[in-house]
Amino acid sequence: MQKMKRSTFVEALLLGGALSINVHAAEDLKPEQVTDLYLKTFINNDVESAKKLNDYLRPAFDNKDALNIAMLEKMGDTIQENMTEEFMRRGAGKTVPELKPAMADFAKALQGAIRRSQCHAVSSTQAQNEYVENSTIATVQYVCKIPNAKIRKADFDMLEKGKKSDAKKMTRILRDATTELKTAPVNKEVRGQYRLYDSEGKKTYWHSGAPGDLLDPIMEGLQPT
Image (cartoon, rainbow, N blue to C red):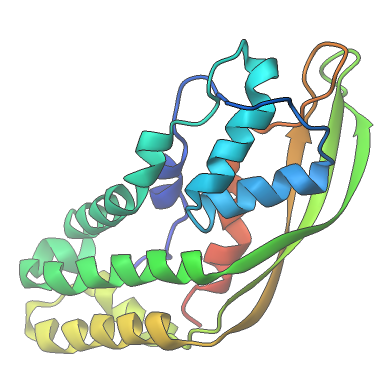
C-alpha cells in the first residue's frame, strides 16, 4: 500500500468557500488559543470548537460563518468513503476487490486514531508578512500525543503489489492494522507548527485557510515502520 496520504483527509477536511462565524461579542484570542480551536475542530472533529471559531471569526468575515458545520458533522463518513475508494482504484484494491470491507474498516480506524490524538499549542512567534503590507503572520508550535500504533511497513508494502493469490494474507494485514489503530496507547509524541494570519481592520482576528496542514505530523507519526 502506498504511504498513507494526508491529502485524502484534507480534501474532506477543507470545507471550501469563505470561512464563517456566530458570537455574543468577539473575544480577543491569542494565536495559541485560536490554534487550539482549529486542532479540536479538525483533529478531534469537535463541533463545539468549530462553533467557537465561527463566533470568534464572524466580525472578520462580514458576519458570515467561516466553517460549514453541517459538512464538518459528516466529515467522518466522507473521509472513510474517499480513502476506501482511492484504495480500490489502484494497487491491491484494484486487483483484489474483496479487500474493500477490510479497507473500509481500516479507514474508519485511522479516522478514529486521529480523533483520539490529544493536541495543544505550546508557543508562538509573530513576524511581518513579506507578501502583504501591514500584515502579520503568527507561527504556532503545537504538540500531539497520538496512538503508538505498531504497523509493519513490510506488510503494507505487499498491498502495493496486489497479487490475487495473497488475498487472505492482505485481508489479515488490514485487519491486524485496524486492531492496532483502535487499541494502541495514546503516548507517542509528535510536534508541528501552524501558520495563522491576522485580519484586516483595527482589531486582529487570527485565522487560517489551510487547516488540513494540522494533520501532517499526525499522519507522519501513524505511518507503518
